[in-house]
Image (cartoon, rainbow, N blue to C red):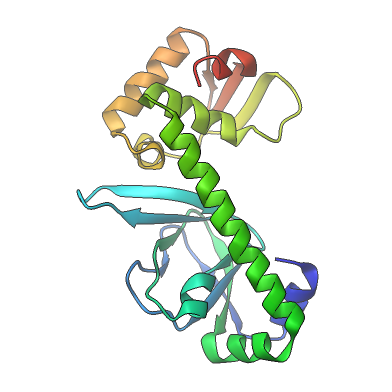
Length: 209
């Protein structure tokens, strides 16, 4: 979200602190407004037809949740759940829509945010569909967590997701993820240092992704 839009939101709505595992948005429900992540992270998930939960992405600071549902008037396509203590601003739908109608810059910014969400979602789905096995999907997931790191060796990432959550991110089972992580450790593709997952060589992991 661009700074000027954040400034507009600063005078609107109200801020609430949510603990871990709090549900902000529930899939299939009509929303009363949009949620802006001020601090913390929120996972976005949906329930597949077979009853399994699929985690689509993790939203961070300055990201807007529920924008597409508010603009289209349709039920929320995903469930949004906090991953940690989060500071969330809620802006009611009517106030938000008045702002959009009043300021063309806001309307353009919202269109840009929605377009970026569509593009990012397409990229994520494309990557998962190209991966032919759970091993490839898991390797791509781990590499995505260190994508911004310029180095190749000893890339560190906090191991804060459970094996179940990682399985939900790649469309697999918890047992499969546990087995694959063990295989990767045995092959020295990854290692654990306390609660930190270390990728000693990005290139080696990329070879199986």
